[in-house]
Structures are given as structure tokens and as C-alpha cells.
Length: 110
Image (cartoon, rainbow, N blue to C red; front, side, top):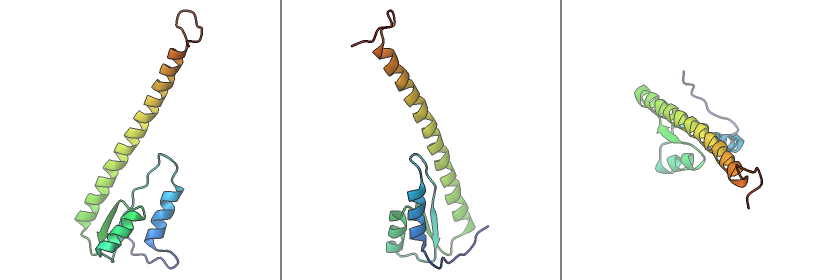
């Protein structure tokens, strides 16, 4: 369901910036602007504010659903990358531990 909302006290660019500020390291919230403003400068401002895509109204349901599916794929890739990064960090810590101690004597290596 799509809602056509006009924000009274804040614009979409500020909302996107706020969302980016609230994200913790490693987090990512996909943002697609859907706006009646479609000048090149509007698109540039939306992306600079933290948007990932920008669609000008009117937009077809097919285009919008395609963009949402693309964002879902990016979320899946982002999540996979985080999982792999955590595994790599764990493996690197174990390698560091193994390399700092002699396996036979248990004494710290130089």
C-alpha cells in the first residue's frame, strides 16, 4: 500500500539524513524517494541526502515493484557480507592467538 504523504515540518531529504544518522555501523536501511519533484537537482539532492534510488511521480507499479525487489536483493547481499565478515574476524582472531603461542610449549612467541 502506498501513501501519498506531505510532511509538514520536515522534508524527505531531512528524513533520509536522520535515518542515516540513526543507523549503527554495519546497518543499512534502503531508501527510495518517490517524489513529484523530478528535476536533476532534486534527484541529486535525494541521493546526497542518503537515498539509494529516486523515482518521479507518476511511477508505474511495475517500476516501483522492480526497484523494491532490487533493494531486497541488496539487503540479502548486505546481510551475507556481514555474516562473512564476522566469520573472517573470528578466524583472524584465532590465527592471531595461534601465532602468538608456541604449539608445543605453550610459551608466547616473539
